[in-house]
Length: 165
Image (cartoon, rainbow, N blue to C red; front, top):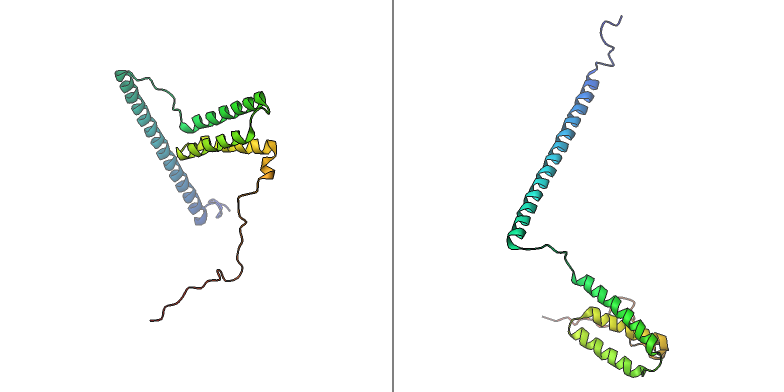
């Protein structure tokens, strides 16, 4: 009865599906092989450049060092300044004239901002705020900010004048 394979196994649609799967497999394998070759080439280039750099360093007596960034240094400065500030306030207590200290800190902050030393100016601003909050001066002094008001309606009350030609 079944001299050949059943029709469902040898149907043209099944053969097409198998062909498509094999084609996808070959394409994926090819892409993977290309990616692997690209990675190997990049590693070879990196090793070549590293060897050249090491030869150059040895020929010129250069010792590689880690990079120190300005941001890291400024963060360390801020942290050291906060520690110093806390120790000074603890040691001196209430012996200082608060208004004079605030004037000096504000003047120092203005100078730092003028010299583009923004981290230092921010640190001084924080110190001023801490002194004001610790003594209650922040509650006594009026806020310098004006409230923001938004107009409702079609925009501003002024209208542009139209020219007659």
